Image (tube, rainbow, N blue to C red):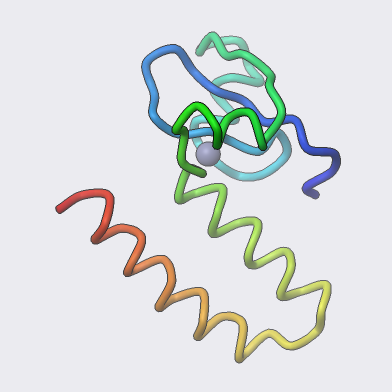
Length: 90
Ligand SMILES: [Zn+2]
């Protein structure tokens, strides 16, 4: 799912997105409804972009599936996403 280290950034957003997941923003970009630029993930971070929480969730779930230790990973993920959301929105 997450191959290579290129990510998508939009002009207006503060977040970067992985290219192949179920993120609503990525799907808008891939269908041409939102303009985006492809840059390296390291470069996106350096410019102050944050991984979009939809993409973070999909990516973490994907990792959990691949490792085959779903339960622990999902618990960890749930806590992580809650903390991340709190940090972003409050
Ligand atoms: Zn995203």
